[in-house]
Image 1: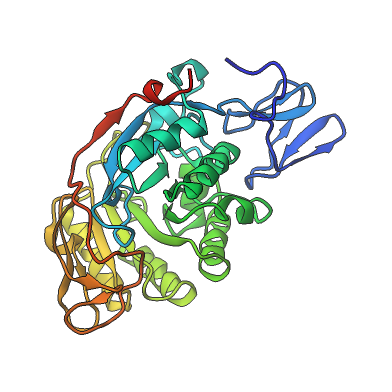
Image 2: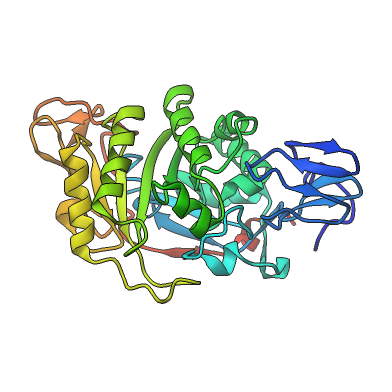
Length: 364
């Protein structure tokens, strides 16, 4: 149900008044909302002259995944992560692969009550090392994500944001203060693609990436979904990789992932494996040390190699960990430091996907 009054749980932050309208300061859209109106994301609403997050404490469902599915390859490898999302999105991607959730205009599809306390209890009970805010962008439900992350941290459970990075400089520090790791979806490297295919802009995403590197302690990795004929040209890939090398360094993991037809891009074919291989070659030639392929079976190009001696330090096959040769954060063969968040033993969750019924963990 949409709240009729603002409560401490549903009250939203990052907004200000301009005349009879509320201006949202959370994302670069800066939606201006009259009474009863919702933002582009559909979940932030002007109710009685106050900004409300209409999806606080509600979720589209919970599932335990391998952390590699986020994808995060340098963050507690092999461990289980409790994943969940809400509804809505502040981007308008025509190729969205979670469109039934992110494009929903029916709050009623949010089938589960999900108090932050219950989420943390569920993660702890199932032995999850982390909780992922995913499926739709947690930026638009930042208050809910922050409250959950605070409770998780108190219990020694880490949190992960899977995000497009479309957030203002004002909101960015408070949101990421409580996040341990992120995968940022860098959807393309042209403003034209962002404008026409996502209804947003490239600049704020690049700003977020630079801020994460320079101003935060968040471990982050980057995903680039390669869409045939849209953002997969060798020239664009080269410019994207050059920018990463110059502004973020050579050690930020980069995932090139395969597109499959969905939502409003069903006319496009799947990304050829050869395109992904070519993109990886471009990236490694430009000095990027950790480049992976996703949404395909390719153990050779999904494993982590030591840049010092070439040893396979983390062997991966479809989300499963084989050999693991990292101790004290370094290659066991030559001692080269491997950037990331590692322990001396990896997890053994494998490729399992386990739905979780949160009702078991709700307070009676």
